[in-house]
Length: 278
Length: 278
Image 1 (cartoon, rainbow over the protein chains, first blue to last red):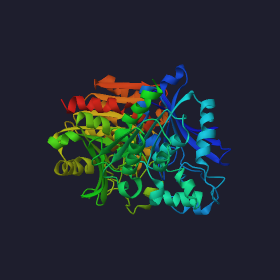
Image 2: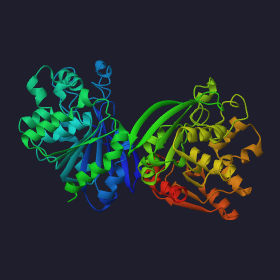
Image 3: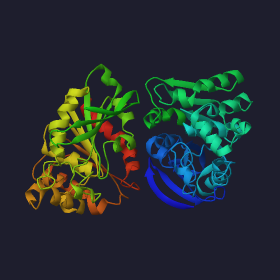
Image 4: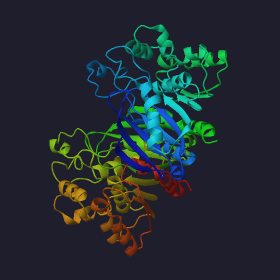
């Protein structure tokens, strides 16, 4: 593991790191915020998954989450959103697919299979790496995400019961199999396998009986992607029909960007801390 | 004035705007955060001046100041750091001079004179524009800045007594006539006129009898530019010798970047609000 940058921040340390990923077969980057309480022992960890076009620095720079992590004693982890410099030329053609658009799954279709292994990287490689290299408790993890990262947070929690004790999302892609961003990604990464698509769709997973800890979801009502890509009403209906606890908050005037995230991140960190730091 | 972007943020509005500047002779950009309290009437304004390489969005995106401005009811203004697209080719050659390095003064040397008029733009054009277009009180203004913007905040407050009721800086260039960044800028913008240099140097101004409201200055002790470019000890000595009130706080472990700014911005907004919102 290589340290790229480290900056003192709210009496803790915001760092950015790179390691040679076994799962991806390439160097992968991630950010870690270690709160001041970690000087006395390992702390719970909160994975923060970013959206399309973002990298491991975006959430760390723009969300304003460290001040709240410092108050509660949470480690924040911000993984990059895809492999980089893969040699797959077509992966750089679009902003909503390929590079910076990994959708937090393992691709099965060429030329993405073998490199785009975001789920395995996060769940099987980054998680133990963090416990080995940082003051992180192995038994207390939460996950949140924004947009594509909200899809990631919901689906990873639903697909890996017991791994995350707390889950939340801001403006998540709730039903990717039904919207353009998700269909493009799933077709590209998974091919025309409808069952595989359903296994990475939060609404389908909940409809199929998967359960996660009580969800907190925030959504801006002036979000330019609300109707076309996000569809929180589908998540709301699936949770209501199947008894999955959900608090869905709709916020007048807010759009899809980081000024929206920053405005509500305190509530999300609080939501996770209530469980993780109890 | 053209609205470039507006985003709801902490129940207020973060916008970015452009207007045809009379002083600069080109379009100039700036950000404005309007807090929720402005719905009931004009609010005090805090100018936030950014450092080298920044633009009107940098501080608004990275500092995390809006949450505190929303609590206190302060309008935040983030001006761009120089004219852009000036046609002066050499202005784009270096990161520490020319474009994004206006040093908050009016240049007198060609080819910068006539375009690089940051002081006149801020003091004579942007200030009345804000009062005309935004819910801003004309009688209550504060100013803060980081690095080159810290130099700007200190020198504009010292050069325009009575215009700013509160002043603070993070890692400011305290004695620009004595360091490489400042000497390069002053030589380029002002020529070899030592008296002109001194009129834009906070330490020299204070030594010469200029006074500002009580200063709050924060400085990280791991700042990579501390000894070579910033020299807070020169400000400290000048203030002590001449009775200018100064609270200089040195912070172990912190560097020059926005994670440092974010860690202490709450104290700065509080410092300004105590005077501006009293």
